[in-house]
Image (cartoon, rainbow, N blue to C red):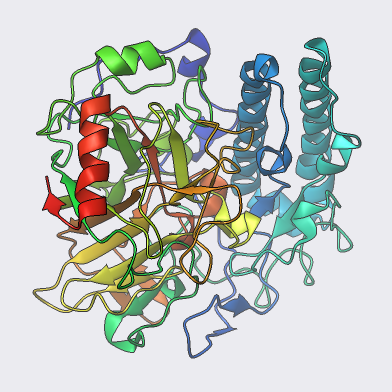
Length: 504
């Protein structure tokens, strides 16, 4: 596949992150030393499994971006750059964690002293700069930002227990886990499952036949339309990224920051998507959508088959240099649909409204914002958020994301990129002060060779791209949208939905 030639890289982006060169193998992935303790138990609803005494597998830090609720507009660019710097610091620390397993095995305090301690110092400085950016424009910086500086080690199967949110170091055992960092069997089990990257693992997969119909771990955004309200729909036909538009930026979360996502995205719709695209650039760009009035950008992390394929980004940051390895799988179908609200008509979305659904850091953040699911064609009454699915022969993998569909009526974005939109309440209505807007639903279908899972190992697995420290967990799947429909088309979308018609 071809590289996105629109990419404007800064000189800094050509530098390899600390330790990454030492981690490159085969497909450019991270060498994952033996750490995985295979003993685990799985609940009947396919909830997260737990290892017994697994070594520190990754790094868990408070997600500062989620905690900044009020940032003056004049400070947001500077704050976003510092938030991206915090992400980069975690990525670099994770690279050191993954490349120093031998040292960790010989020194129970190594992770704390050599990795987490220096990381805390760097984060403290970045958090101080965030406060400076806010005060510089006359704002009031949140008190006690430095409490979010501390990070801790986390096991491969260990769910977030909430400590990452309070900034505590959580290092009562020196950061090595209860067994001094070697796992219950001395760290002899294979942790990379033969694919040379940090996950996914066998326990991240489930046979779709073992998922109960109607079961989901989470309910956000999945309330079906009722008998009242607005029952129409509008389908946007925008292709499946035939133009091979890829980059590892995130225009919403890290504008102006090269490689702000640390993983590669697929793009459909707007064809001028990178970290440096202004609203004017988006409005003037070409679009892959059949309706040329829709220059919206729809983007999501690519799905890869970890089969050793050398992709165009095998040696790049965001790609193989950060553990995102293997063949990029293009969706065979990308169904983009806007639907109505159970209880009321919908109003038009404002132009340049930004919405993120799901959480790229849900493995370390916890599941509060996780909101994507996996299923198989022919089995789509069975949805699972924290597992990749194994589909029977003739069935294809399906990724589904249903976006927030309530808008505060004022803002096209917010400091944490979430507060300006909301999910419907249990009865299908919007929270007080919010208005119903067309709900974006994205359904992606993939022809994926079924991985082989035997004896606790998975061969040739598939996985979504992600931040390296998230270990390619399925719970981190997410989807992004910027509305760049012209006024006439948006009005048509609203009219179709409110009148009960199905349009495209």
